[in-house]
Figure 1: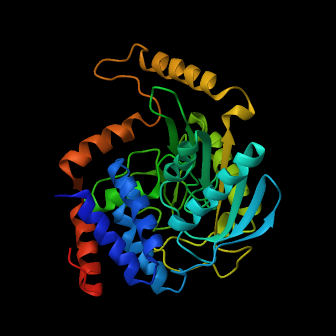
Figure 2: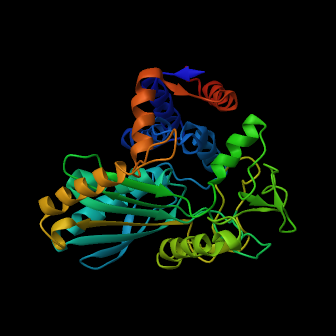
Figure 3: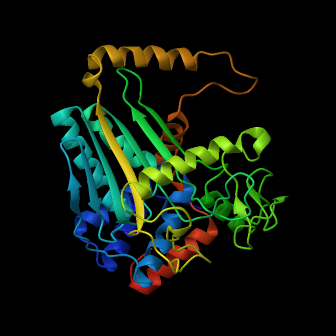
Length: 357
C-alpha cells in the first residue's frame, strides 16, 4: 500500500504536536522520519513513530526540551538534550557545529541526555547546506555482541559522513557498524521472513536465522558477521562510536544505553553511568585544508571515476548516496510503500489522538 509523502508528513507532524512538541520541533521531527522513508530506509521512517510515542508514554521523552550547552571551547561543545527527541536535538547540535566551523574551521559537538535520532545521514547532510563536510554518529541500546561474546554490549552505532561535490551530487555514507540495523530485523518480523545467516546469533552464540533471536537472548552481529569475515572490524567501529557518543559526552554507554521503545524493549537499565543516549556530530570547512572549488572539482573526478568502473553483470557501480537518491526520485512519484503492520500502528495513533489518517 502506497501513501502520498506529504499526507504522511502532515500526519506525523500532528502526532508529534499531540504529545506536546512545538510546531517547529514537530516539523523537524517529521522531516527526519519522512526523509528516511523517501530514501528507502524504511526501518527508520514512520515505522518508528509509534516507538517515539511509547518513549513519551514511559516518561522517557520530553516533548519541549531546553537544549543547552554545558561545556564549550571555540571549536567544541557538549550539549544536554534534556530528554528531547533525538530527531530535534541532533539538528540543533549540527547548527552549533556549523556555527563553530564558520568561525574557526571546524566544529564538533557531543550530545548527552538525548534519544534515538533517526537516520544519521540526515544530520551529517545538514553541513552540505553550508558547503561543509558533515559527520554524525550515535550510540544505541545494547543489541550487539562483540566478537566472541555471548553478551550484548553495543548498539548498532551508525556512522555517517556527507561530502559535497561541484557538479555531482554529494557523497553520503550512512551505515550501521553491525551486519544489519535492528530495524531490518523488525521488517523481517513484520514480513514473517527468516534472517540471513551472518546477521544474528542465538543465546548460546550460534549462528541462526531466527528473526526474533535478539528478543530471545541472542544478539546482532558486528559488521562482518564472524571473525573470519572481519567482525572484529565492525566491533571496533561500534566501540569507537560508543566512546565518542557516550563516554566523551557524559551520556550512557555500552550496556547502559537505554533502549528505544520498540516492542519488547520498553524499560531502562537499572544502573546508569550517564544521561540518556549520546550523539557525536561535526562540521568541517573545506577551505580549512585547500580551496573549496578545487576540492569539489576533484570530488567530481572521484565520483565519475568510481561510477565508470566495470560492473558485474546486471549491476552498476554506485557511490554512497546514489541508492537513496534513486529511491527518493521514485517515491516522490509513486508514494511511500508502507507495510501493513506499519499502517496498523499509524491507524492506532490516529484513533488515539483523533487525527485523520
